[in-house]
Each structure stands twice: as structure tokens, then as C-alpha cells.
Image 1 (spheres, one colour):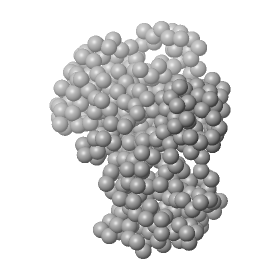
Image 2: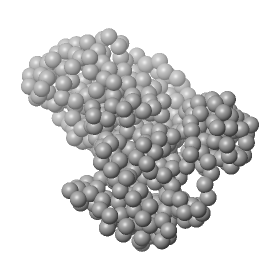
Image 3: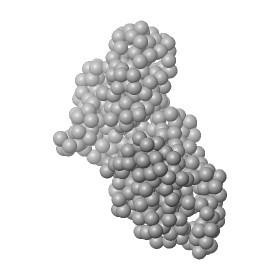
Image 4: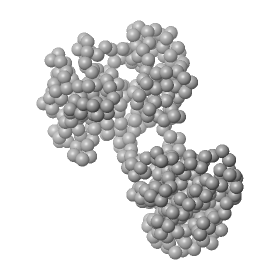
Length: 443
């Protein structure tokens, strides 16, 4: 029986704007570590790459001390939040701008108190925003020219590429739309690396002055060395500036690193800030589960990324909306299933769960036994549609049907998807009018 709030709109979980599931699944398989700007700047300094002098502060008092330490009355304070568009963002208490110019230690303290401890909301964070736990204060440098530089892995060419533009200091996606000719791509020979000739060509073609071409070329080579040494997936410098006194400086940098290299980049991965990540996704990673929360209402528990994508796609094709991408991997053990169910059911929108598992490494009857135990332990009341295929699937089907739980064993994928959508709609209606509902496969 279901006793849930009256006020939940039935259409809320059926929003048409849910992104295509396969896109999310692919992004999950290509994982990257991002680090805060102040840490990225320190890493660049360790490679003797030019960045403005600056320090991090974790409190308003520390911000005042940092401003005094820099001995300059023209500084920039940047909220340390892992999201783009900080300068145009606003904080949850109404304060506007995550990047501000400051002119005194007292002003540094005052502005830091408006940022630290609050959530910054930008076009990339969503409405909930992300917490700002520190600010990065740097000397303000005046650019004579601003450029864009990125080093990336190009999967199509199976080699690194350098993307550069004479139009830095602005949204590079907008440049790509309005003036694509201003963006140049330079493939890098993985064996030769960035040669003097290639680095000089890039610096010259994007417009560094004669005074700084040699320095800029040297900086490109150092950035590439960092890229290779640290198993980076992305180095993005925007803006990359030639200052009025002909310094070459990385004014803002974003670095990303391959999670698969964590075993040999321990120092880097110790810099991870989990407060900037979805709490459920962090918990999932601790249990070796691949989990991404979506906006739908049908929970998905699947083993294998390809099967997970297919499951979410067939839910969409039948008029439903997946609530998550969740891959429990090859070993769908009872412990893994319970953790997965805890993650799925933590979302109050979930009104049905579709379990779609291929029993190869683990037998279907063992999976069914674990599934029944988890449903009993958690006292779950929402309907669960289970499609178990593989070894001992007949025994699994029998175990589920005789369990007395709200678990419905269905062999056919299309039929299972249809029932998941139908059950989900019934639960939402029941929640809206605050009534109980009983289920059977005949609906």
C-alpha cells in the first residue's frame, strides 16, 4: 500500500528535457578528475609555467592576510568552485559575482565573507549551486593580448591535439559558433611530442608579438610535458595572456586527469574535492558502482554499461523516463544490489525499479536470492520489475514468483520495459490522490 504526499505533481517526473541516457552513460565511462584553480596554478608553477602570484584562503581572516602578503592594492578574488561562468554567477544569499576585483585587505575580508560558506550558482552548476569553501586571491595583471590554448586527447585521431585561438578571454564555444576560423587545431605526434617547430608555429599563428614568441613556445612545451607526465585528459588555459610588460601568463586554467591513472598519480588524486560532486555519486564510487542521477522516475539497476544504456533507451521508447544510470558491474552480489537500491530509493521521485541483469559471472538464482533479501531488509513498497537472463534463469524466475514480494519476473525486454512504465504511472497517480494500489502483471 502507498501512503505518500498529495502535493507531488504527477507530471514532474515525466519532464521531456531528460537528456539522452546513452550520452550520460558514455560520459560516466570517460571519467576525469578536476581540481580547483589554485591547485592547478600551483601545479603549473611546479613546471615553471607563468601564472600570476596568488594564494588560497579558507576564511575571511585568511583572505585579509593573503591580501597583505601580496603587497598590492589591485587584486582579483575568485570563488573556488568547480564550474564555469563563476564571474557571472550568484550566491545562494543573493551576492552577485564569483570573481571580483579588490583594492585592499579589508575589502578582501569583506568579499570573502560573502563567498566562503555559501553556494555559487552558475549556468553549469544547476539551481542547487556548489559550495564555495575557499577563495583564490591573485595579483591583477593587465593583458595586452589574450589567447586560448587547450591540450586534449583526440579519440578520432588517437593522439593528443593542441587547440589554440587568437580570441581568448571569452567563451570558446561562442567563438566556435561565430568565428570558427579563429580556432586552430594542431595534431601532436605522440612519439615526437611538441617540437620547437610546432610550438613556435602555434605561438606565431595565434598572434604573440615578436617579443614573446620564444617564451610562448617554451610555455607550450612545458604544458605538454605536464599533460603527459600527469595523465591529463585536458589542459585548458583561458585567457592565456601577453601582458603589457610582455610576460606570458596563464590567467585562468582548468585541468582534468584520467581516473584510471589514480594508482600512479596519488598526489594529484589527494586533491579531489568531493564537496563539489553529487553526494550519491561519491557514495556509489566508494562501493565500485557507476551511478549518475537523472531526472526521471524509473530506477534502473543493470550490470554492464552497454546493457544499462539499452535499458534506459527502451524505457524512453516506451514513454517512461529513467531516474538514473546505475551499473553494478560483473559481480552483482547481494551487497552491491543493496547499495544500489539504497542509492536508487534515496530519490523520492522513483516510482518503480527496473532490474535488468545478465547472469554470467553470477548465476541468476543467486541474484534473485540477493534481490529478495534486499527487498525484505529494506521493506520496499514500490514495484520492482526483474529481467534476469543467463545461467539458472528458470530457477530465478521461480524464486521471485514464490517470494511474495512486489517483484515481477519478466523475461522479454520489451514487455519488462512496458510494465515498468505502466507501474510507474500508476504509482504516481496513487501518490497524487493519496491512495493505495495493488499490482499484478495484467495491470
